Amino acid sequence: MIYGDEDFRFDSVWIGEEMGTRLRCSHCPTGMSVERVIGFEDETRHRRDLRATLSRRLAELYSPSDFVIHHMSCGSHGAAVRLSHLPSGVAVERAIGFEPPNRSRREMVEELWRRIRESEDARGAHGGNRTHTPLTG
Image (tube, rainbow, N blue to C red; front, side, top):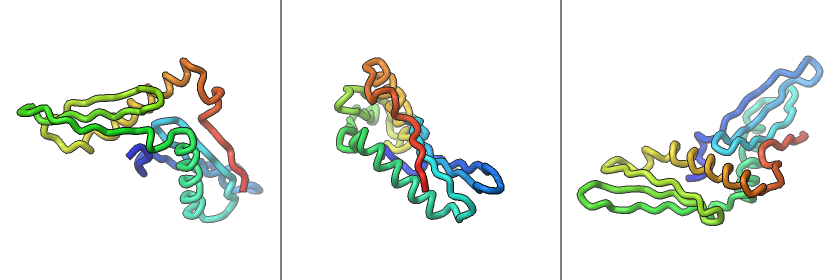
């Protein structure tokens, strides 16, 4: 839920005849990314590896068990969804009426990550270095 496939983006950059290609995987809601020079190799395996690496790093910083989703009934008005990050106390709520809960997922997750980042920036969490990690290989 928090680390959905659609939240990851890949960019490849040609860095020259001698070096080949650099591939970067970014988690759009958090702005975190990892990259590596893949030279002239096929990107498929590297994409899987970079996404797995970034997912592990996200889970190290933000354990999936720290996120809670509450589905609340609003009687004849339908329902509401609340997405919370327990350690920071940050939460996002949406009245969804009778729509499927997943319809608002992306916007809610993006807003939650933005609020978590703002909360961390205000506290100085993660030593100010949580966004980009180059990889070798």
